[in-house]
Length: 89
Image (cartoon, rainbow, N blue to C red; front, side, top):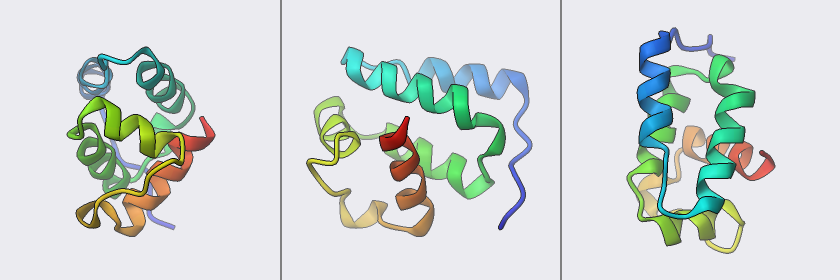
């Protein structure tokens, strides 16, 4: 398994700020995920999370709830791993 990424506190704060969404449900899920997993994410996981955060709020929520699958561009192993962990948060 790849080693966890080395992310400094400032980068994590920036990501948390960026993760703030228009839908409270997304905020809650993403915040819980970061609280539980931020220190164990690999570089690929960090990039996958950032890619997922590029999505609009409603499609992201549908994926987080398991009601929709990610678009083709977001189906790598890292994207699937992060999405699964987000769903468990």
